[in-house]
Length: 135
Image 1 (tube, one colour):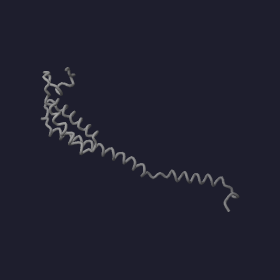
Image 2 (cartoon, helix red, strand yellow):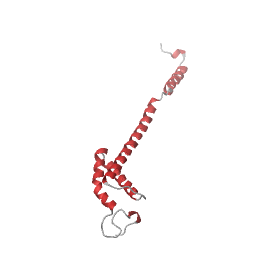
Image 3 (cartoon, one colour):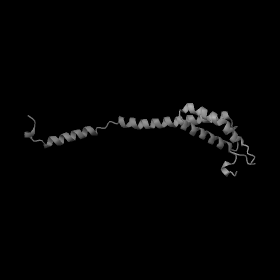
Image 4 (cartoon, one colour):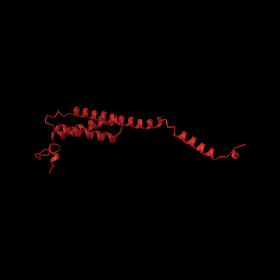
């Protein structure tokens, strides 16, 4: 099986023996634990899957560094925790921004409606003659 350059070091070893690289072995060992950590904390399978994918992408990026950290299941769960906290922060910030927009729109004191009512009343009164006034 031929692998593309971006797959080197991730899946099957380069000698073609069929064994997994350490990163691929860690992935298979840690996937249930990382996903299992995220799912009950975020309450959404789709979100847990996305955060799990982001966690393993961070592991691949870390493995490519000049001085990579020791990649363990505990390290991955820690990264997953940070990904989840970052998600909560983004969600809270977005909710506060949207809440500010809605609250800000309601809090504006706009006298335009009263001005329109006064102008309409003046227009109607100016068209009335002294004889058309109610008795």
